[in-house]
Each structure stands twice: as C-alpha cells, then as structure tokens.
Image (cartoon, rainbow, N blue to C red):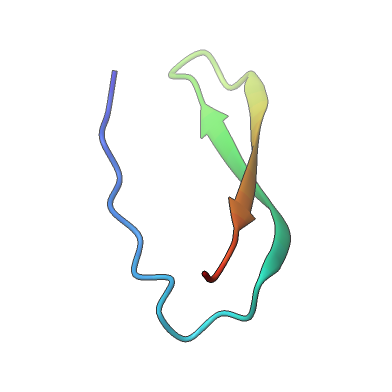
Length: 41
C-alpha cells in the first residue's frame, strides 16, 4: 500500500480520473484507476 497526497487547489470543480500504471518485476503491468470528485462550497 502507498499513500499519495495531491494538491487540487488549482483544479476546477468536476470529476477527474487518475490512472496509475504499476509495473511488476516480472514485466506485467496493471492499470489502477481512481475517480476523484472535487466540489467547491
């Protein structure tokens, strides 16, 4: 498990999709997607 901190202060309100490619030592790749919702009150 890893932790990632993102500064979203410059992003507009909306929905964003983050894609990370995890490359294993064996050479296989896994794509991990996270949907991020930003709402400004």
